Amino acid sequence: MSTRTGRAPRADARRNAARLLAAADEAFQQIGTDASLEAIAREAGVAIGTLYGHFPDRRALIAAVLRERHDALFAVGERVQVDRPPADALACWVRAVAEHAATYRGLAEVIAGSRGDQASDLHADCVRLESLTRRIAARARRSGVLRRSATNDDLTALMNAAAWVRVHHSPRQADRLVAATLAGLRPA
Image (cartoon, rainbow, N blue to C red):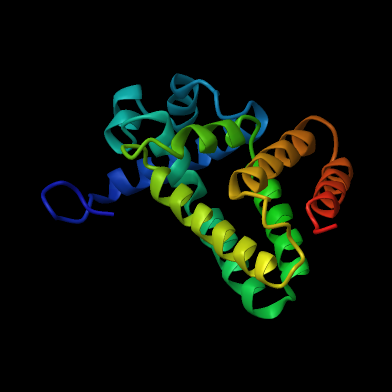
């Protein structure tokens, strides 16, 4: 992390950012992505201006909190393409994305809203997620385990629906939804 001047941030600025990230993670886990930014700043022991100095908007804060989780998710996507047969890779990827999107209540909606917003701090991660989905799905189509008519948007809708089910019902029910839908997307 560096400032606009190119210098490394001061130690107190790094501590403030770390406290803000920890407070945001806690608030997002308890309340969801619409948690009060003022409450997050208060919990971190800083003024709201300090929060906005580090994170200019809610999506920037969410992106920073999710940075390591996104890296881990993308590593799963890269790994399943190599280590798993196409049908298994697709199912594993859909479940991994759904589980990730259910990390915080409202996260699936935030991610979906960032897909087309190039100014969003989450946009690059959305592009990367879509690229992985496209490659994994293309491999499944080529191998005959996914209908040619099944679109990447269909898979994104499934991931978002499964994330919602994970948050509002149970992981088990979300897995059943994924299994049933993927079975329906296989060629007849």
